[in-house]
Length: 224
Ligand SMILES: Cc1cc2nc3c(=O)[nH]c(=O)nc-3n(C[C@H](O)[C@H](O)[C@H](O)COP(=O)(O)OP(=O)(O)OC[C@H]3O[C@@H](n4cnc5c(N)ncnc54)[C@H](O)[C@@H]3O)c2cc1C
Image 1 (cartoon, rainbow, N blue to C red):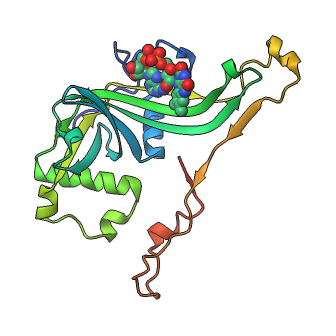
Image 2: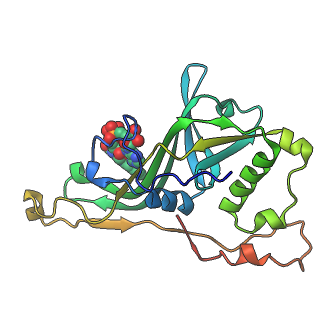
Image 3: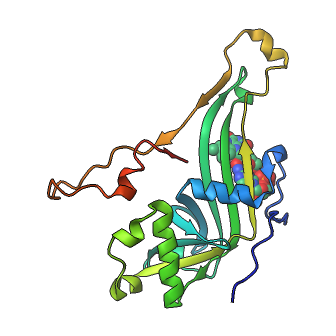
């Protein structure tokens, strides 16, 4: 059964309502999707044995859920607990006249929810496909897929994209029309971009094995 899409506006709940720097908040689900699609590493915040733990990890998604995976031995992937996932893209340093007004141009998303351990074999395989394709489109069809033993050694978590928030900052420093403008100091934005480099073949490969097109074509393209 196909479930209806999540609402196009992000919900304003006790958890997601922006309290500070509210003007940077966006309630557009399309902005959430764009931020998730621009990256593939998130930070998973979880409580393990009563202590906070924030773990960098890769992710994939469909229209309704984020997928995270790892070893069945991973304590951060226990599932069934409240988690918080953050994705951040830094677009530049905002260098103001005063240190107080310095900032960062960024796009970030925070997703709150209870992570569910995926046990249905078909759903697990589909989640792993999404995750693989998210980082490297075309790789699920190219690489050997997980066998039964590897699947058993892998935990897949699904986290609903329902309760999520987005913040985006763009533009110049904010002290250009204040008293500090008289200081005569340079101020502005130092942009930051990251691009994919040239593929480096495994040294043990035969030299005539070409780089697959779906990998080669990313060289020089922007990430983030
Ligand atoms: C790269 C980067 C660097 C930053 N550096 C600083 C800094 O040095 N100092 C500083 O004060 N702030 C910084 N921020 C902004 C920071 O992330 C918070 O938005 C801000 O500090 C408000 O925090 P708060 O706890 O008062 O949020 P609140 O407004 O109380 O948070 C309420 C809810 O809003 C949502 N929310 C809050 N922040 C974000 C976010 N960034 N993205 C998506 N949803 C969000 C969450 O769902 C959260 O539960 C930075 C952001 C980024 C991406």
